[in-house]
Image 1 (cartoon, rainbow, N blue to C red):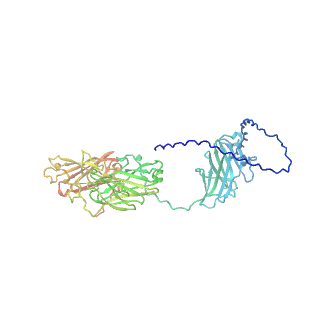
Image 2 (image 1 turned 45 degrees about the horizontal axis):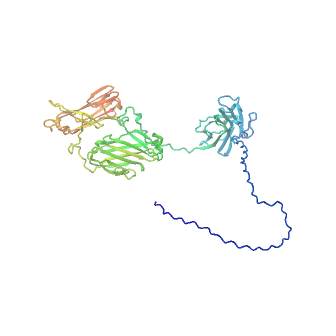
Image 3 (image 1 turned 60 degrees about the vertical axis):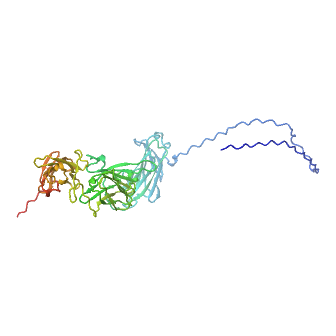
Length: 613
């Protein structure tokens, strides 16, 4: 701010003399009727008074000493027993050294049990070392209120559906316990059996109780502390119907895996990661993993399904107190990459209202194709699921199909023992695209080619195709679906199809449209769950055209096979790999066909004899 302008000062005023005051006329006073007073003190002199000396600084008088504090446990409230006996209406308390006999015990008296209501009794007494003999002071004690009689006892609170609860209110330096008594046939006190208490609470059966002893183990630093408690009637509820069994199993965890697969779980399981939502004031999120069943796309029904269930009993306790998410990333098992693309799927999110599902599909061509997303919200720009239960929408897959799914459930607090599912079904009112390079009208899709002698898809295994006609040594390699042992149906299954037009031009040779005999061979295939297949006797069924030959060998703890006919076979006690060979006859009517191997482990009942003719 700019400085204020200076204000000139006014010159001082000159002194102004005042005019003299006029004289005041004197008024005559009347004569006094009283005699003149004699002064009792000499007249004051005009001399100034001398200065008084300073007053001395006085300290306040000392305060009276404070009275001694009142003891929290006055000894007169628990008088000493007279020859080990207490007066009428009183009960005795025995103070003794912990771990010793009763030679040095000290006995005092307290008021016993007081009736608060017909079903409530109370008690209390105090631990004060100042009231005890010197031999007991500052040492661990065993304190017992012995055989305290129940007022108006014995009590049972009438009926089999009640019990008695004895609840102690004591500090942590006191450990309470009890002994209860009933009246015997001779009116003597007979101890009753009782279970140990929990957190100072003891439950007594409903039979009549005539007296009880209250025990307390007291530490030396527990001076001037009270032992108090209540006896109350606990009324049991009516018999309740049995609680239904939980529908959701407790899934195994990756830590429990004995022979983990590439996902870290046993068998065909895939991992799910569960995470609580951190609270607003502290970052206390908890993470937990389980191994659950994978998704599956069924070629014959055109249906993909995935479901997951959860139960608080199977999760850390933090999950029951927080909203949590369950995330399954990169779901490819089973056959997700083989879902036909370029078509519409009727998609259903099956969830209890309040449970949110988010699904993101990753296309095979991620550079040129956007994500396929559908959920309750619009985080990924996909279809928004408006909420509710079993709501269906139409979802279109890209032309190249999908490589995998990411699925996330968001579960609010209190949603226990529930499940949610994602179902996608090929809409029936549309023309399905042919799998390239297969022409329309064929039923066998061409297998994927091998890349540097390897199969990229984990669900496929390398197969070698070789010509069998004279003078030819042409071979090629393709990827066929692996065999598997189904843990639920208890069956080994392998199936495949073939088509001459799927083989490359170099393999078909001259006159490529003419079918030549060839062999499909898969060696050392580690099929899915083969290690779980039982060994010993089994039944094998070969499903194939008449002029097509199939054989199977099993390896593991031993080498068994090859088996090339339907019937009973013997498998190794532990199977790790199989060899499969298929010989294709050079006839057009056997082309574009398929074959399967089904093995059901035994033993089996003997075949009954043929009925007589």
